[in-house]
Length: 303
Image 1 (cartoon, one colour):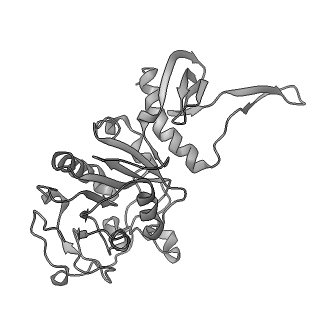
Image 2 (image 1 turned 90 degrees about the horizontal axis):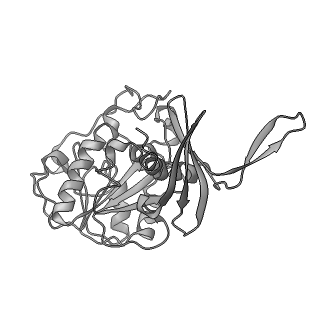
Image 3 (image 1 turned 90 degrees about the vertical axis):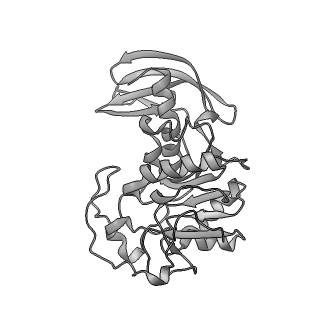
């Protein structure tokens, strides 16, 4: 276990986090679900989330898990043969791995000695904690993988932190949505969407699962400004396929990308449009929108 550059209190000396009624609401988008106090959402599906990461990325130890909770991610990383050091800002009852220390990411001064930080940060503090881990990791040669919601990567405000970061490698797209609470507690779950493992400061990646914004190339952007149609452009996909006439739309303060479509006339004489290309699932489509929409906005100079 790699020594940490901050004092970490042994978990046995701390009080277990007591359950409290859920309070507040999810802040990615309006939600009908109440949030669990302290953002105490655990990575219950770590048994398939971790293999998804390891199957696409060459992860080496030692590994730091600085928001370990009960140790779901840590346990699976250890099972994969990695040397893992774990801590959290609070102690949880019934830990899944021994020696989960007590410590605060904000107090970290160095990640020297670690090859990777792999974690699922509390959403309320995600940006601040991610900024600190990424900054320290870039300085100290420690790669970072964050399990995040798809919505989190879209805003332009995070482009310097993520997509424009000089050591950004890409996204590992998960094919289904991880659970944060037991099925019996589903009513307490916040709104969920596609999660992605993000990796910065990487050394290499294997497999086609790694996809970054840099894998897409936009050419021939042109502003049109016709009703909800903002503009069009040609898009080169990571596979090398080039799609001409991809369109950016905006309506009611919402923007989205559409592929070219074919016009046809219904029996009643009204016009309709059928897409020439479609994604196999909503999750894949959401992932595409999250990656390409910021590029399209930049190419078409949309504020």
